[in-house]
Image (cartoon, rainbow, N blue to C red; front, side):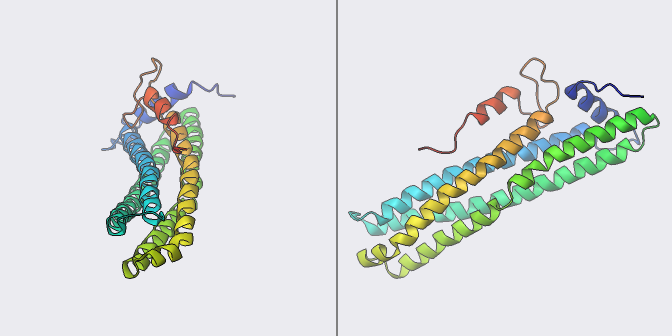
Length: 241
């Protein structure tokens, strides 16, 4: 017997909601979905803040290495502060990304467990079908982020090494010597921003798939976000060129 596939939003709410009554789970499927999408929103914000901090760091580095810089000490201190913020931002992004991935694994693992408890074979098949589809969509995020964290670490390392070099030789000649490395770091920062775009697109795709309700255009997603917010975020361009 061929099963007719219900609408995406209705089926997702149905399957997640029925898990509340199966096995008396303390945490419902909807609650786990909410935690997962909240984590995605946090990570999305962190990626956007990372791109913004790259721009800020680039500005201080450009100011530091410009030939007519009148106050090298002041420019260097501004650069140091920006590097520290970049370093902290990278650590925060890594922490929140790991948490998001962990919540995603828990969400789909518990969904699989609750789905196996259906006595109706058709419901069990529907549950597994949707779980498989959604887990594949969620997998787009870690796939898109492959290499991004490594590039971020390399970028921060470059910034710190420039800082160390100039802390020992903050002279016009020292700045002139390190300028090619500084220009490379600036370029690497731009490449990092480009690599972030596919990750943001993947997160938006998953959040859209996990949206519950939404028939009015203002329906809250599982993580509490709204369709209009998703569209607004998608229109934000990382590049400021």
